[in-house]
Length: 473
Image (tube, rainbow, N blue to C red; front, side, top):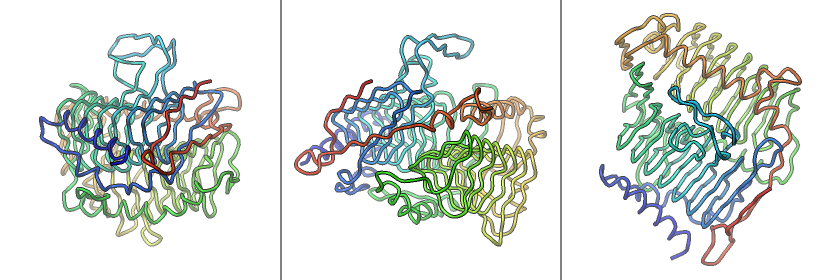
């Protein structure tokens, strides 16, 4: 048995120990998902900038095709084509605010991944766990294709494909396929496939459940196989374009980025694409005939195709926008799928919020009015009426409110204002308001970045593993 095979078995055993209470076995979801040969085919790479503290430590791990930025430590883990982006980690001397408490940091925060199996994941933001603010811990987990771990320390858990854990600390939980959870902290919890759940203490609780028959069309998972469905077909068709980008040691950008913008050399850019001022385009983003207005962004695993973003638009990790026109300040949440066609074009009005994991897959042209909250599964105007609400109306909700499969309880005004405050923070952090000298963000700090590559053992009993590597300033 190879060292890589033994490592995978060790990870399975450790995760299963944590999930013994629900009796969930991760083994069938790990074995056979990725052919062993692929772990030795792809290089890993890390970014160097003046703005981010440097320390990378990799020990007894396979990190094939993965990207690292900021301080990252990986022990006894398998990371396949994952993005570990630590550009928002807290720094020594920062004060972390939590529930009225002020917690000073003694050291720079580090992302620490141990005894875990991550496939095409995105890890970003910083730990929101007040008990250990200097460490963003991911330990004893299996997390499958295109899951997002955003500001969420995770321990002893399973994350299904296209799931998102957002600002939530997990202990011994199972998060289903295409589920989204933002709930502060969960322990020994099972979140079903297609559940969209946002809870903030006793202040508000938003919950929507995708119908099973709808979810199975877009993404489903059989043990021992890669996920299947419309989502996977969509990304697989465009995989050759990414392979060309990653095969080149050096490549010139396909389009010129305007002043204050950052366009990753590991993004795909095709057709008549325009990148305006203060735009951020992250690695593994895909742009085709796309117009990104001033201060917009396309984050990891985003696809903007034959679409225009008018300005200050946020397309969160995994968001997909096809044949659409987005007004200024529109937010498209994690792993949302907005799919218009040339005959059925999609328009979204200024200031609207498209909730994480929303599916809009049109069979007729559709216009979403300005300043609306949109969720769920939408194909036409009738569906939109059942799965949207003006933000002004949402702000008046107090107590319990139901619309179709969506249930809300609590303060609508706190829900809306909390969302809008967070979106303003994201724009600021990404550099949307850069004025040429002040208010720098990720777009400006990412303009001058060097990428170094590292390779695994190409053959022998250690094939696919990387030697222990410690990279310091």
